[in-house]
Length: 65
Image (tube, rainbow, N blue to C red; front, side, top):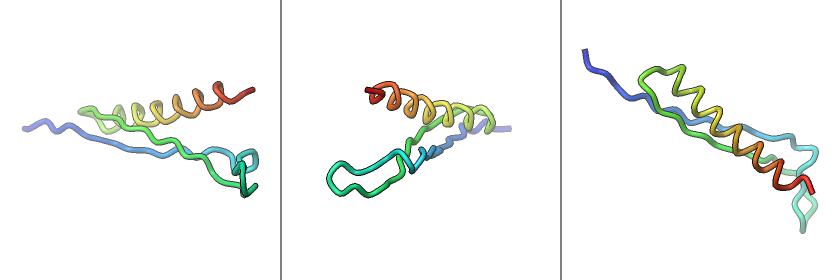
């Protein structure tokens, strides 16, 4: 039996209602991607999701004003 490293990529989308382009005023959706790798698909997926979620949290903390 051969072990295989599984790779997962996820995209987390933010709330559209509070994101507006500075020049045009158009609403847009923020997207944060994350990647994970492990021998188990569940662990790989969790790592990818947490990576994307951490980027979202860092963005929110940086732009709270």
